[in-house]
Amino acid sequence: MHLDPNIRIRNSPIPVVSEIRFLGVIFDRKLTFLPHVFHLRKKCEKSLNILKVLSKTSWGADRTSLLRIYQAVILSRIDYGCMVYGSARPTVLRRLDTVHHSALRICSGAFRTSPVESVCYLSPATASLKA
Image 1 (tube, helix red, strand yellow):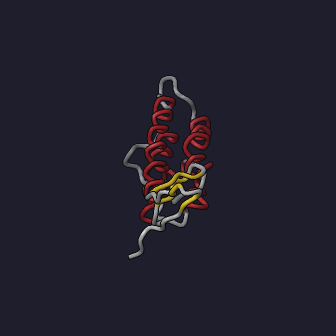
Image 2 (cartoon, rainbow, N blue to C red; image 1 turned 135 degrees about the horizontal axis):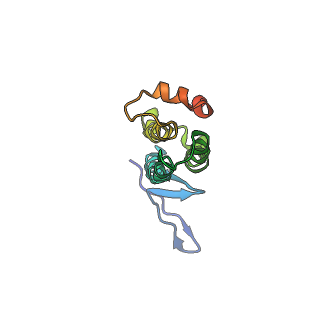
Image 3 (cartoon, rainbow, N blue to C red; image 1 turned 90 degrees about the vertical axis):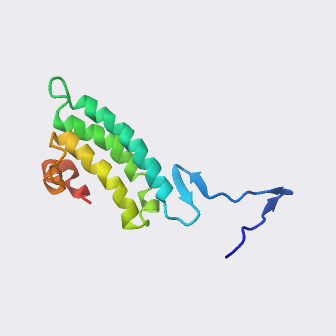
């Protein structure tokens, strides 16, 4: 077990932290990116409410508009930094799949119990993003 280094700049110590946010990506000590995925999932789940409101059957937007809003609001957040946190374990990255799949279900008007494959097939703009 290694002790934390004692680094100083002009006699002021630089603290060792367990997590640091740099350019919007949260790096943890072991580079598991689990805190970043949790934070990203929480932000995207809040953004799903926009799609839920706009997808009402009586006055809501059509499928193409909902897919564009999804790509602009949710998918852009998931894509940002994916080259960095894409090296995380597949089990960690699978936590983002639920947000992606539920957004596709909302945009296509499918039921919550419909299979992922058919939902991705119904949404041709994001069919290539199937996890």
